[in-house]
Image 1 (tube, one colour):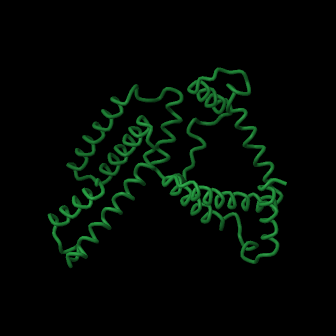
Image 2: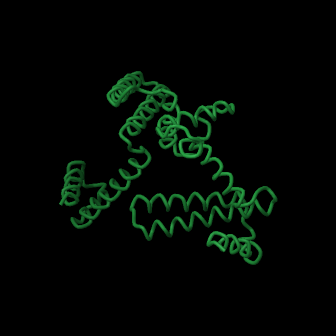
Image 3: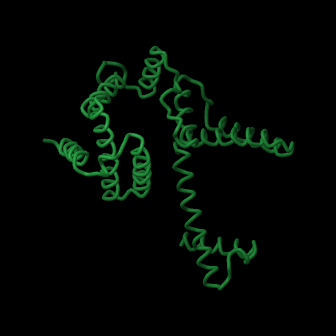
Amino acid sequence: MSKVDELRRLVAQLRQECPWDRAQTVHSMRLYLQEETAELVAALDADVPNDVREELGDVLFQLVFLAELYSERGDFSLDEVAEGIRSKMVERHPHIFGGASADGAGTNAAWEKQKARAGRSRVDGVPLTLPALARAHRVAEKVAGVGFDWPDLAAVLAKMDEERAELAEAIRSGNPEAVAHEYGDLLLATANVGRYLGVAGEDALRMANARFERRFRGVEALAAAAGIEPGSAGAEQLEAWWQAVKREEAG
């Protein structure tokens, strides 16, 4: 028996014998799946193998648990989930299983054409619940697969400059709706810059947030050491502490 089969049997037992597990539904499990997925992403960022292994296990448990809930309802089994993704991956890799060219761009285009023939838009399948920056990146990848894209990085950077100028004009107009519109366009262009650089905007922003928070805690520590509340230190002092923290980080 495989370890996954053992895990599936464990989940089935928990559903029968544990009041908490028995009370869970497909809706209540959404929060736990989101939480565990976020913890896995954080572990991947840190790239500590033991932590990644543990978080992968937590996510795997959520997936097996959800499959068990649907199996109890008679909808599908975990085996059917596995077979469904196996079949899809075979279909998606004709360069391995169907004798097509091994060119990456070509196989991706072929996959998108397959979906189009099935009546699906190229942007279908990008979840609406994804964080907006991550969704912008994935939608742009989808449409780029059929050539709807800028020719190079320079063109994308020029588009970002254009959107920044349009945002400045909207700010001057004093129209809040125009400002929100142009700010959104600038964020979208910025997401495409990341795509061209091979950097996922969501990952870059998450790491920038962590960096900012770490440095600000350093500013708070310097303020505490000086016996000063950060709110009363003044902009110049706060900036001096900020630069001191950055220098310390740089070594």
